[in-house]
Length: 228
Image 1 (cartoon, one colour):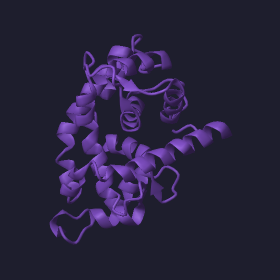
Image 2 (image 1 turned 180 degrees about the vertical axis):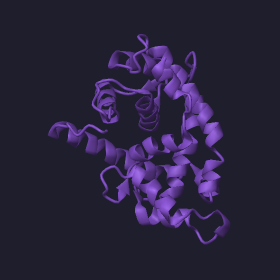
Image 3 (image 1 turned 135 degrees about the vertical axis):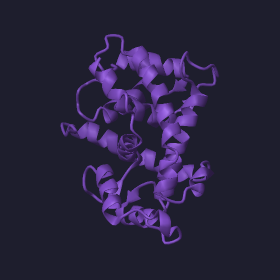
């Protein structure tokens, strides 16, 4: 269940982050040509094994900073992690993203929230010019290899290039007549979009897409970690 306890100040801050991320998606079309190679849901699913492997690498990072093994990372632990990844973001920006990704209001970032948070920071931040070193487990190059293909999936679904997914566009894309053998049944495409559209507004930003996309890819050993 997602937490709705957001005050007006934070709501405004999160709306600004949402707009900034949408603009980033619009600008990204020039930098992520890989989305043009995707043709259908089948071509997306074929990338799942490699993406799953990358997400497991991020899980290892999460475990290394979850010192008390309680399944969450606090702000202090997050700052240390970002320092090692050499991602340059102000403290205010980190706090804003931290709150934006803590969707259940638990005051701690869980594994799926951490993955989303790291991806948003990767997209919105610039690598520090002071160091190009990799962290002990994951660095800028590996982060890029994990998140760039996910961005390309979003861009593939965002046919009108406005930085937001709309239901009609997603359904049309996944049921393209150009690839009749790979068309998804209408009930499946409707279900996929509903999994992303938390507010039932008919439009989906990258953050909501990313939470849903991770569940499609699956991190099949996450439950083992949470219960250990």
